[in-house]
Length: 99
Image (cartoon, rainbow, N blue to C red; front, top):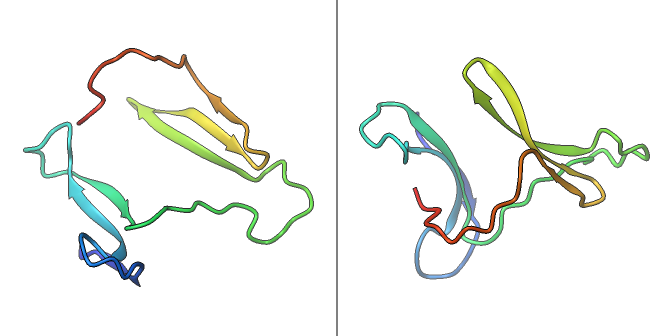
């Protein structure tokens, strides 16, 4: 599948200047044929909820989910007031968080 090129996003001369959605090599299993999805931007990435300007915003949330086996788990929720709820605990260990 080709990248979805969203067009020129920056006039900065270095690096990727376009916004893209693309498939990238899996970082945990680099020899796997399975790919990860990357949202790429030379600037920021904005996630928008309530684009219909509803006055009742209980449903306007960003859910961060993962699967544990066949079970889908919500690992975090960001609501329309900026409250971030995280399942589990926040760790401050000094360790390499790289792939």
